[in-house]
Length: 318
Ligand code: TXA
Ligand code: MG
Image (cartoon, rainbow, N blue to C red; front, top):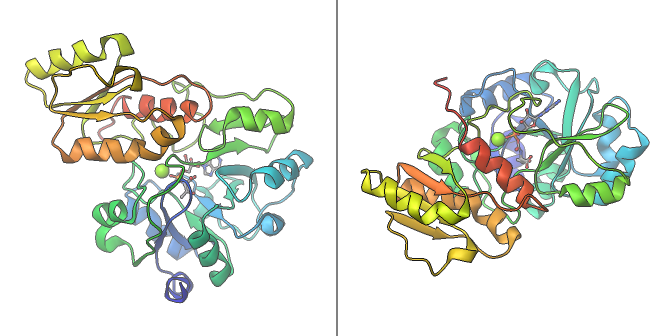
């Protein structure tokens, strides 16, 4: 842990576990170190990062003003899978926000991440520790396999518990809205706020840096209704594809003719926890096409459906 904090102080990159996914961290106040994140990920510099801090009480060091609703949310959800977008404080360099006057901040709920933050003493700017556009890593092995030598130090905290990224809430306006569904559910957020929250449709790009083809495995992803998933897989397999299937719990006993089948766990929490690992496994097993259907968009199902839609979205050549 001490070594990891030293790497951050020296302007290096440290991959670390959070409860959601692994992050690729750098000293948030060091523009040179932040630039290395973009380089390692192959991510365009206009895409803002999340600044991770060690506790809600540190929030005022990083943002310009803290509306009352934000106190409510921070108190209830931090440490945890909620990221708040607020007005950028002077401490945050524009390099970390992709040039925006707002900054995304969160307190991760993982003992290793919290120990790193307290040992380091500052803010850690960190996107998910994957190459730009691909599936987020939920184990230290995923990080090493994808980023290799581009990262100076990897802290291994075992598999992530939540498995999908944090929920991002824009708290800059009078009415907060969800920019990206994630580990903190819409229902829980609405209960705390006492009002319904707007969630963007996936077709509209509202968060800078969210392209339709984000969160994508190598294999092409096709979404179909659950009733036809078995037929669709068989048809594609017969056409010569190496088909991978994410098989819904209701169909566990169905005979599927495909190259590889992953049975989705019955609980949504277990599905979210496993999702990125399942997609990586189907890639590893040589699938070129993944057939899946969307879960009910409640609770963590909203984030899972969002990631599957993006994985199935048009691929950009860039
Ligand atoms: O769970 C997570 O959020 C993980 C862990 C490591 O904390 N991090 C993560 O970071 O998913 P990343 O960079 O992969 O996704 C951050 C998202 C991006 O879509 C980015 O556009 C958005 O946050 N974002 C960051 N700053 C923003 C801002 N000022 N306004 C709007 N969106 C912002
Ligand atoms: Mg990411």
